[in-house]
Length: 356
Ligand code: FNR
Image (cartoon, rainbow, N blue to C red):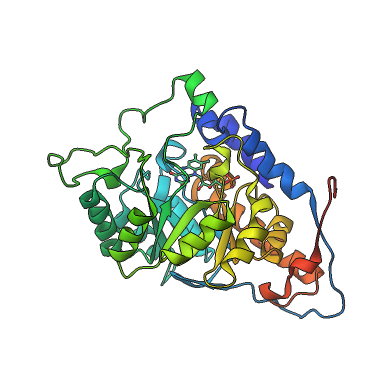
């Protein structure tokens, strides 16, 4: 199935309220639409007569060696979409050599997610996402949990001082998980009775000091997610980030935020090679991966398409999504005369109001 067909199959299979939760964005869904539209404005200038029989598309990232250039972005509540939930996503990502970012909003506890990934590959990369928490001891307990489970990096989401106003969820009254599902990593944290869940509260006053404190709690590399402004990218490096993820949260937070790919070149310039830069938001084709890598991303993250694959066909569906994107990307790289990702460069991208 094409990604479009997997989306349609997922839509047919899902409770419409859960479909809306995944598909939707904040406000009028401007930032969500902008992510996809932005990629339509970029086109490639392929180079010729310099290719190779076989391409090497692997990337070395802090917390992942020889990984696929497509990362499974952190998304919540996989068991809501398929009974196998995060275990299916983990096996599929590991089988395709892709990093999986799990985290506080997973409906499967992190040790089980890492164990599932290890069923599919010898040395899979699973990263753990957390939000800055107002109580330091909660952050510290989550960091230890991720370390003990075998995660190889942490991701701190910085773009959510408040929860986004998700119009569809507000209309549908979707504000909590149905009975039988829980954010399992939030169980048994400091200050809560045994077995009880701690909320994932937003922390409007979170600061760079909090971020640096989290970096200081662990020897794992710590990525920062949700950076759009180049000045923040520099601050992230100054505060110990191992990598920067350019993202507008899939259009689910600030509805007037710019499309993430439009922010990528300035962030890459600001970071100046000090740490790798990832991009997510609106990546739907191998050509989008090629554009992002040419503009300086080390890899891209994919959110919704993975969830459509999961809802439509479980582990098989997630593998199909990743394989499709990776095959299309490899094909595009070959057509651009590339042997490896670094052969794509910014001079090979043109941007116009209507490139297509
Ligand atoms: C997300 N995303 C997200 N990001 C994050 O930092 N923490 C989270 O808990 C979640 N949860 C989440 C749930 C769902 C249902 C979606 C669709 C997305 C955002 C995600 O990591 C990523 O930034 C975007 O999904 C990328 O955009 P695309 O690929 O969906 O266009």
